[in-house]
Length: 96
Image 1 (cartoon, rainbow, N blue to C red):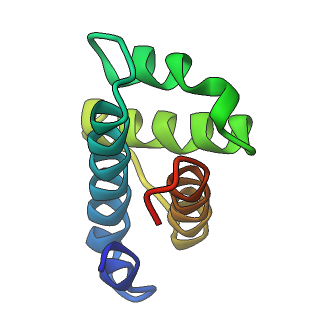
Image 2 (spheres, rainbow, N blue to C red; image 1 turned 180 degrees about the vertical axis):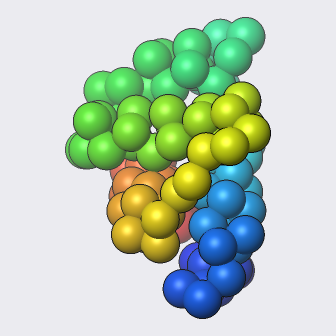
C-alpha cells in the first residue's frame, strides 16, 4: 500500500510514502522488542539484522529531513530508493 502511494507525478506523495514506510518499520521494530526510546536507538539495536545498513540509515535520515526541514525537496528517485531500503529492512526482520 505504501509503495502505491508513491506517484512519480505527485511530489507530495514522495514525502508521504517515506514517512509512512518509516512508521511501519518503527512499528515492526517495537513489535520485535528492540530497545530504545527513539527510532534511531531501536535501529541501532537491530543493526545486525539489516542486510543493507547504509541504505536503511539513508532512508531514515531522509525521513528526518522531511519531518524537520520544512523546505526540503525530495525527488522521486530518492523516495523510491528509500522505499526499497525500507522494504529490504522489513524483509530482513521477517515482517514481509
